[in-house]
Image 1 (cartoon, one colour):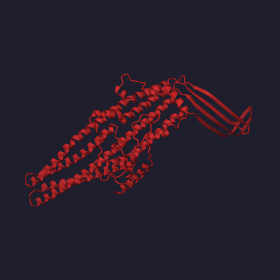
Image 2: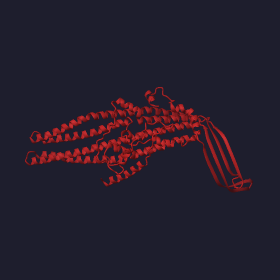
Image 3: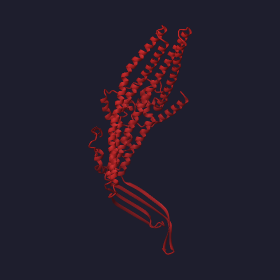
Image 4: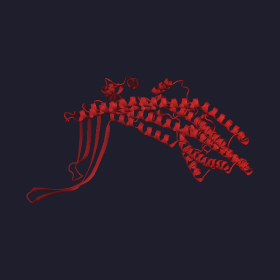
Length: 526
């Protein structure tokens, strides 16, 4: 192992161990008024489940795909960062709920004032001194005509979008891990084949040299063999370089170097037809769910824009204690003020109407993009399905071709010694054997990656689904910690219910419908 790899491995293992140690074991809980989310998986697994990750804490090489997936699931920096981003997004909900509660602020001042006042021509009166004041300001919103409920709905939709983005990141990470695992196995086999090919050509060169010594072949024949030997050496070096690149990418994604990798044993998919895959896409695809969440966000923006045209009622109060004049601190004054304030916009020269129209058109775009996301997800599934079927069906042909190429080469070697074949014929068959064997190895890797791509398109490429022993990350755990932090008992629920009556229909059912819209998209959106 090179010094650079040792340093990378040490840093990766240290960061991975810290990340694993800091992950709480959340229990699965129901989200209170939370966003729609994909099914979560409770960590109701045996205590030894974390061995998949803990077993790599000492820097031991990874030997199975299950270990690679488990380690990446809990230590991959990109995936951990996306989870932190989602936890940050969870705070939007208590922030929106806090707007229903009272607002109280305190302002204290200690100031110096100096003024000159001309009481008569050329007669000036001077006043100066220090003064101290304190003011307590209270405000409580009573009725916002749906403004705060729209903000609450937008926050929930943002959280839903964040969860789907996390699922997308997890699917991409798992697909990358599976791809690089298959790539390392493939490149190791290709390097082994290249070495075998070089050894074969070397033996051929030695044999040809002896035959040239007894004048059985010409110098041209010997030079032909030498050409293939030198080219074979270059192919070995190229295969070593490709293997090194795959192993370094494995270290980057998984967090540990690959050991003696076992053949991947995960079945990954059992869909019998493309139509079955489409069904799974429609139900589980995080790409589709993310597009639906974006539509909900812009839908909430319509409600917010409409609410700006309505009244807003609030209770305000203030209390001040300070000096009678700003020039002394000896005489004091106390003031108490309270009021019910009604704010009603009247004329804004079309600004609110433009805002509503902008929100409507943005939502219309998101509505159509949701349909586009469904088409893209289905297209990805169809492409993966075709690639998987083609790769799966071609494996037998590649295997048969490799067997036939090996037999043809062995037969040509015997025929060459008998004078029935030329040296060039043997070299061509050796080249064909190398090409077919390399293609067979690549086809095996491509078939497994295509299978993983199909599962990813269907929304099932998640760590705990692939390896049930992995302790699953539960996004509901952090949401439950945030939920309720901005609530005032009774008051928040009462005012939230009043606001919900104004915008609830718009947030729950799409109010802006395209008469010629896609019925398929309508069926997909909740």
